[in-house]
Image 1 (cartoon, rainbow, N blue to C red):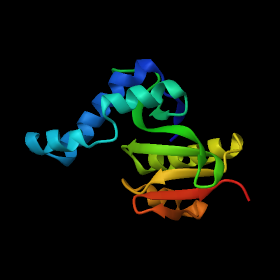
Image 2 (cartoon, one colour; image 1 turned 90 degrees about the vertical axis):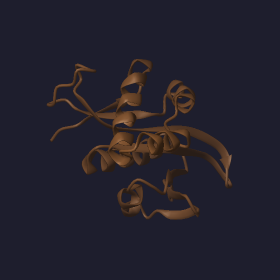
Image 3 (cartoon, rainbow, N blue to C red; image 1 turned 120 degrees about the horizontal axis):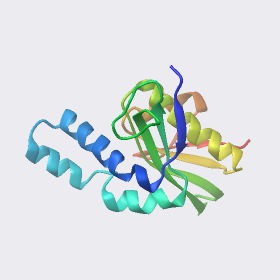
Length: 157
C-alpha cells in the first residue's frame, strides 16, 4: 500500500477531530467515559489550534481509499509536533505531542517521518510520547527514556 504524507493544514482540522471522535467511540463505548477521556486528551481543539499553524504536524492518507472528507484519500493517522529550543541541554529538538493512527503501517511511517524530518532539519533529538504503540515504532531508532511518559531518539552522532 502506498501512503501519502503532508503537513497538516487548517482545512484538516475538523477531519482530525472527527477521526479522534471515532477513536474515542471505539475505546469508550460509554458516553460518560468518552467525555471524561476527551477532557484529558492531547487532541483537544486548543491543542490542535496551537500545533497546526506551526507547520511541524503531519498527516498520512491512503490515496487508494476514497474519503468523503478529502479527495486525497482516507485519513490513516497524524502527529502534532513543534520544535523546541534549549531543552535538556540540546540546542534544537522536535517535540511530538501526540500520534494517532488507524493502522500499524501508518503509525510506523509517521514515527519514521518525525525522525527523518528532525535529521533533515539538523535537530538533535526527537521526543515521542510513550503511549499508543509509539515505543514499538521507535525502538529501531534506539529510543531511550527521558521522563516516565516520554522517549527520546538522538538524531545526530
